[in-house]
Length: 204
Image (cartoon, rainbow, N blue to C red; front, side, top):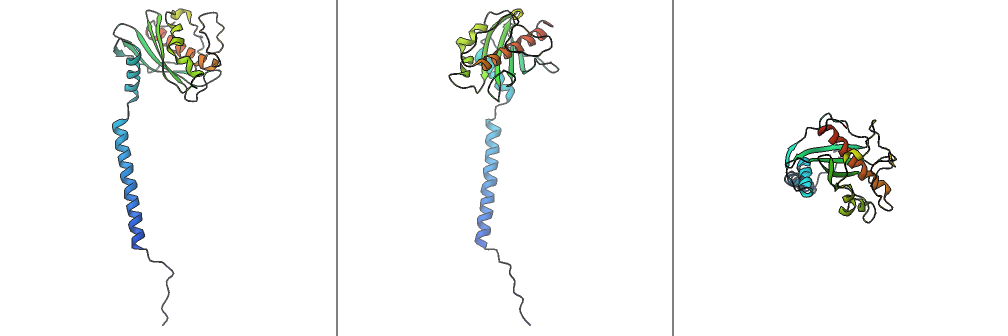
């Protein structure tokens, strides 16, 4: 009787050890990365409050419930606070859109308004080009908004942002070679002004 020859190759014990070892190493690495992520991840809400603290001297007294709020087109109100000195603080994200911004990630702005007047505007997130669009986030450029009355900033009734703003009301100076980024900053301020009208004044 002929012995049937098997074409199956026996597993090399050394190869099995290598595969098992590599699998264990990959598993341990994944667990370590997950652990690092848990301990180093900054909560988004905490990140925004830190940004506010860095840009405005009066501490936050309370957070405003923005659920159900209708955003100005192209903008997103991410958070709103009332400071201890009575100022309203708005964090607005502006998405890249028609004649607004170049960065696909959009831009984030902090706008502080007190007694109907803009106290401060500051950028807290953007990836605009250094030396060009990024200039629209420089403190000396953003200072032009300080002291502007919210009544002087045009908010369209249909919530549709259009640039250029030919309303005849307040219009900021443009950053050279960065018109779209200038529009993004202005859109963020408009978004904050609309929110102020809703939360502080009842309506604009």
